[in-house]
Amino acid sequence: MASMVVVQHKQPSSVIFSSSLSDFNGAKLTASVQYKRKLWQPKGALRITASSAKKILIMGGTRFIGIFLSRLLVQEGHQVTLFTRGKAPIAQQLPGESDTDFADFSSKILHLKGDRKDFEFVKSSLSAEGFDVVYDINGREANEVEPILDALPNLEQYIYCSSAGVYLKTDTPPHFEIDAVDPKSRHKGKLETESLLASRDVNWTSLRPVYIYGPLNYNPVEEWFFHRLKAGRPIPVPNSGIQVTQLGHVKDLAKAFVKVLGNEKASKEVFNISGEKYVTFAGLAKACAKAGGFPEPEIVHYNPKEFDFGKKKPFPFRDQHFFTSIEKAKSVLGWKPEFDLVEGLADSYNLDFGRGTFRKEADFSTDDIILGKSLVLQT
Image (cartoon, rainbow, N blue to C red):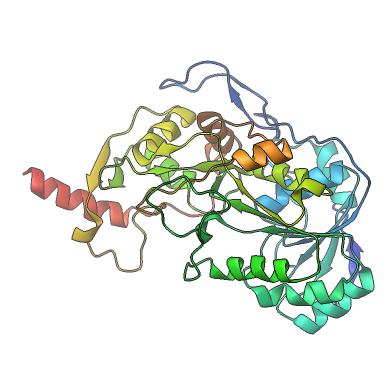
């Protein structure tokens, strides 16, 4: 039986992430980045003006988006509870975060331990606690949401993390919130969840991020490029490399989540959330190099149809144009991303990969297949 506990952490004698090199608030390049790393200053301060305090439940919250969102909400004065299986620490000191800030956060964050797929437990535990607002960061299927709604009949707002991956492919990008969706997409569970929320008598808001990047990213987005740049290897890019995509910084996404809290304009609305500008695959490789202070990389183009990579992914993005309009979020919510792409990638590099931390070890096996064939063709 899970119970509500305040997680209070003693300060460790040695912290994995040193605070001596940067500030948790992020990084801004103060000069044009060339082949050497340049001096950088804080950007993207995670401070939002407080509103009336709410009793908030975050489904998930110990990885990536939830880590940044939970801090913003605690800073606003809300009572925040994380619902997790308890496999990861509820609070961990972040790169560049001061001991004082970490102690303050970890003394206030609450934890409800359980499995969200145990529907009866979800109903009983949530109804017993009662919450004003739910942030669903890790929900993938509609049937995981129903028990939460059933348990909280007086819920003020359900805020859902969906995905821009729900859109049907189009010949006329960017994707707008009113565009057709794909019921067969791999994100169909999120689409079905949005439909469920719309069918219930609940105040809901859904955010649809595109590709998310930033410190502590568990998906191999920027990390994939950083591994190759650090090793001095060429960057294999499928086809022409002019495929256009879009990335949004995790701190900008977290602020968008806070912007919709208690916002009448966000009621029963969907918002695309990502970066201001688009970028090509080749341009992204070059931007990662600039952010990390590496030389401009050699880019090797290949036709994916000529290779058999098995179950391995040779490239971390869809081989297609994929980007959205964020004008609705800007005009309706008054939200605007703070990070441009190179600044955001520098923030990620300086607070994570550049410190020697990453989620996945480098795997160049598919690169070697591509480069091996490229050498044969050149010969």
